[in-house]
Image 1: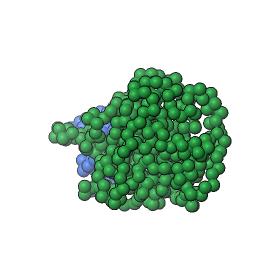
Image 2: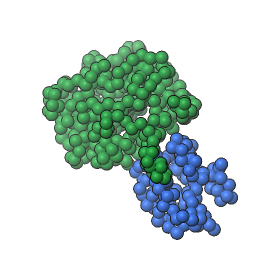
Image 3: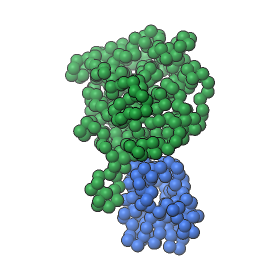
Image 4: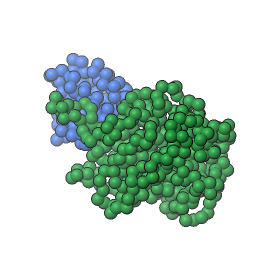
Length: 113
Length: 344
């Protein structure tokens, strides 16, 4: 599971460079994210633009990452594919995360809602 | 309801000499590789043959390819017990027509476990299962360790149904014969191609599930499903298959899983078969993360069955001997599937 991280101001941007976060990669994703988000700034933005599909394991991993962030940080998501959006909707997790249409929209501080 | 039929002793503990299918005896394994090439070449004709054999194609123009059984034999075998995947160490049989009780319905009002149509045991799927028996399993036999493991002593897959790598072949043939024209290549048809079949087999690892799922869903477009239905199919299949890996086989990598789908009466009907542990309590989980998890904060699991229950219809689980069978269906048409089930 390849992730690309860069910090811009108070935002840590993490791009997922895989097309699936599924049962085969969820644990790897979670472990890698935990490494990257240690001492994270106020906002962690997960760029999901390359992710076509996520299953319940992947979703659980994202929830887990959010829960282990430091108290001062929050996890936001951007650029979700239609399939990924569907999974978030079905599990009501779309109401739990701040979801941005695009990474650019997230950078400007506007949320999808 | 045709129950599970035994063709061997009740213990099911015999090598497949007791099998009613002579072509699947171990002694035939030596000829299987030679037949395999012919089967692949003739697979499309074989699909027609199978269709005729079960009376679903009225053309009567049967081309029997080399290496394939004559139509009469196919017809005679259909409805007979088929060896369960797993091989000699678990030489049990399940009849193709077993499964949930089927009844004609109004096609609309259905509840879990009731099928408004003849179901996945319809002619096409039977034919696919039978035809596939002529193609040997190429996967190397994994190590022993789980009662549902693939057969070590049976690398030709004499007891494994539906292990056809070219899952789209029967459908590709069918759509030009039965459907009378080219099917849409994209995922936007929304009409469903009656009798279209997909079959994938895989070992019980999350990587195998991923690969099989990608192959399966790439071909699902050819079934004429709507984009929504394709999406729902991928989500439900992923959850159900990964549940089998995780719970039925408890992450043991040498189990087998077969996934089949067929378009029937406006639905895509799926059947997942595995040889792992039975579902606790004999029923699928109802839905959603444990309320205690919700109360304690955000749940990190339990989403799988929530999504299956939201998206899939006619969810039906059966334990047949030492084999699990999960059946469910999805509407092939367009429109938001979640809305359709949301008011349930």
